[in-house]
Length: 386
Image: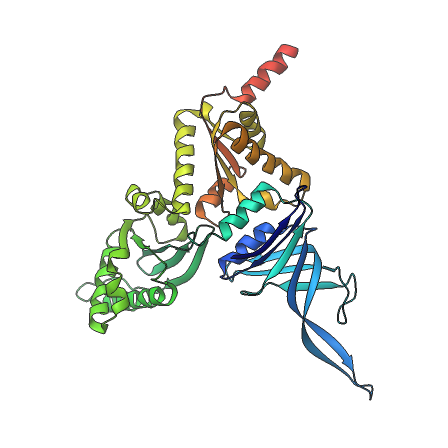
């Protein structure tokens, strides 16, 4: 993402002009947009024209519109973002107040205006425009007959390919069918790796499976690379890392990223940091429950007591359409950063760790010091009143 212009007043109102450069930038933009914002972008409009003879035809014209946003639709697999709204500036093609849907395009700038730019949104822009935070981890999670190829970026987990091949069982005295099917499977996974992984960007490729599937695949991969003289694979051999996983399904990714050997190698990536923070929270919940809180009301009380060491919060909460509720989450983040000096980790809801956090109401905290269970304290106070 490229920041072309930023014009924000002292009262936090203003506008920014951005240019999305890759698919992941659409996810960042989705998190910036809210209903009621004003979006100005280039778009295509179908226009009806009437000729002098009275015949009616239609043509598609490119025009620039400014919409008051009413609906935001994001397709996470295709990374496409459509924004529907009413036109704020009339032109020769579109009347004032008419509905239109803009599909934001890569390498075409747009201007987003808000009545209030809060700290969370401004942080998101900074993160999106930071060139160092790109997709630098790929993972092939596999078992016999099934493989998922995933790209792990700082903001999301993208499933790039799913390979499924039926593998017959070994028969007594003959393994030919079994071995041929395995070879077809490994070949399909190899082609998926070559098609979807950009070796110039990716620092590490994790190959994970239960048992010896990963070892057999890597042996096949580099044997084929030598046979075909595939320089890309041979030059990047040190980037491949074998890890154990309990299955070949996508959900095993969390287990892989929390493996100590993996975290040490990926210590500089945001995704690994999120997984570790969530792991620390679960450990704390198990051993010292008075230092692990989740749920908005409890975490807010801990923030008031300046007790929060690490705040874990899902970016899904900042997309809440009720402004008052959203501001409550923003105030919580600001209070932890400004007053307590705590560490704030905003989890992507498109990461496996973010999905897990969403199951804990989307907000949790690791505390510096124990606080007696708030629900018990509330019960005690109510029994005293009786």
